[in-house]
Amino acid sequence: SLSSLILFGGEIFAAEDTPTDQPTTLREGGMSLEQMGTILQRLDKDLSGEIGNWQLTIADIPVIIVTDDANNRMRILVAIRKADTLTPDELTRIMQANFDSALDARYAVAQNILWSAFIHPISTLHDRQFIEAVGQTINLALTYGTSYSSGLLLYGGGDSRGIQQRELIDQLLKQGQPT
Image (tube, rainbow, N blue to C red; front, side, top):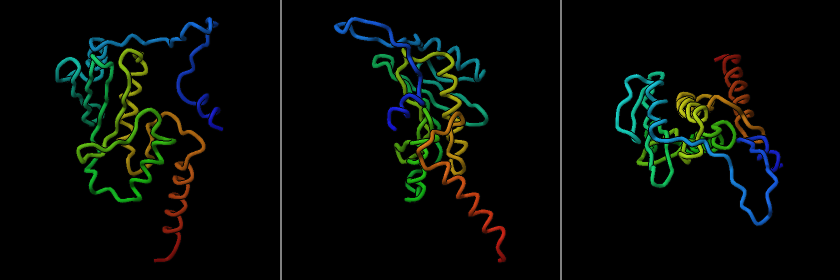
């Protein structure tokens, strides 16, 4: 059910008893651009760019991080391929992955490029969450064309598990039959 998907995914925040006329607020991570820069420098000693707009390389994958501090937004981006060459089947597959195996990173198309992207408010990020977001974004790019996975979880109820199993069956059928 939808409620079990919501409970299964994402962070769970402890509910506090508050009067009904008082708004409930979620814990914030307190991430700042300076803190992001420090973390990124640890991940790649050759980090380049300026505060709020960085380029780095992890696992031989170029990563771009852009921020809009005034609007409390950030993006982690990895270019995958030209978008105008995607087939309808490939577009369907990346949308299926966005549902169950991409997790917090997502496939996106902009400027005729297929991207792996993580988009999030800056102030609610925690250090670990930010580092995991970088990893998920890279994993999603690395697994494009195979498992289409960010590497953390695979939610039930989507198509990825069945498709991945079907791909194996199709491969075995092809290999096992005479040519």
